[in-house]
Length: 113
Image (cartoon, rainbow, N blue to C red; front, side, top):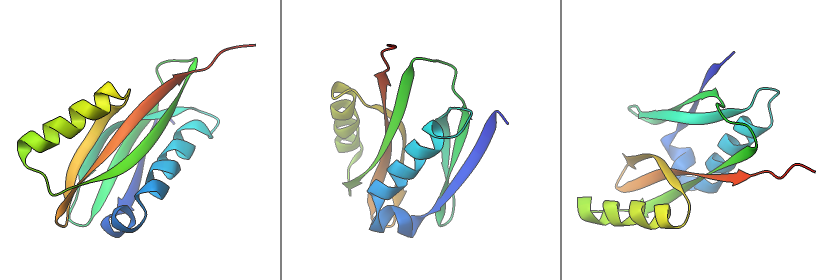
């Protein structure tokens, strides 16, 4: 199957954001087909991620979920720009309860022996 969805509830993001990022990383890299997160939708009390079969080979994706706090629009842009400068692409940012959370992706080139 070229597409998959995975759902996490808001409480998982709030209590253990690092585990959500690790779960997405493991899902994308450890199945027979390799996937990458290509979209997200925040629902009433959960977030759904859409995974697609990877289009590229020779790299590994890793994901982190970061709680960014209660941010203004300009502060959110600043956080996203800072992540970009650190080598992370922003996949999604969404409010959960009183805080913003973001899903960030980093690609690492795998050297062949």
